[in-house]
Amino acid sequence: DISSIRDEVSKSQISLVVAVASFVPRSKSLLAGIQKLENEYDSGACCGPSDASKPTVIVIKTDESDELEELAIELGLNDVPSYQIYRNGVVMGASERAADVTVDKIRSQLKSAAAATTTAGACCPPSTSSTSCCPPSTPSTSCCPDGSAPTDAADILKLVQKSYANTVNGEEGCCVSVQPEMLGYTQEQIIKAGKDANLGLGCGNPINFANIQKGETLVDLGSGAGIDCFLSADLVGEEGSVIGIDMTPDMIYKARQNL
Image 1 (tube, rainbow, N blue to C red):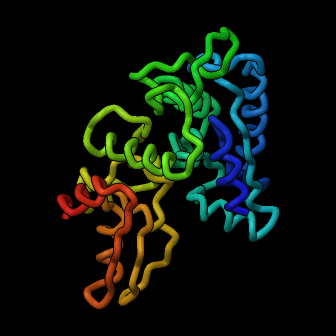
Image 2 (spheres, rainbow, N blue to C red):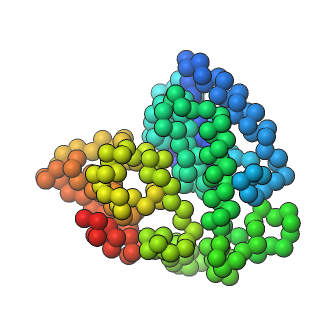
């Protein structure tokens, strides 16, 4: 189910989720190409765009059941074939049209996601080992000032809030933005909501499958700079209402500025 997939991609540094169907001839050759791509990775290598850790590959065969087809659609994989690339659970790249899906494009975006992992820094403890998957932590690249990840729930909350606040304020942080189009937003939606309403930090575009109706009350948890709230406002109309909730005060302030 979708929760299992989201759990899997959140636990993996780099993940590739692919939607295919046997009735589409290109699906077979694409899966063969992805298998070859997996073999290109050296299982003993860890870091960097050229020797990144082997991605977790999840294949959704949409024609095997209605549930799998619905699962792909819920993830935003509406075409066949199509794909999404995740870094620690965050979408870093995705196909735009089925006709444009190639192994070369997947390879390129996997390398870009791996490069973002390295340059953005990970909350890893300092290491002097040359074989460690985590590069030595420094104040400029680590999420955690002392190079170690917090374990207390309150400290984790503060770290996440600080990381998002740094991003929205244009300061250095661990949150890596991606192009809005990669998250499933059309140019029309981006223009309509305003360029500052999307920071590229979300997990996808929920508007496409939320089936929002006029007159409804919609609550957006983790509303960020407000793009989904602004787009939903037109859908619920004057008789409905939209409420945005975010754990980071800086995000709320930014969203109010974007109104």
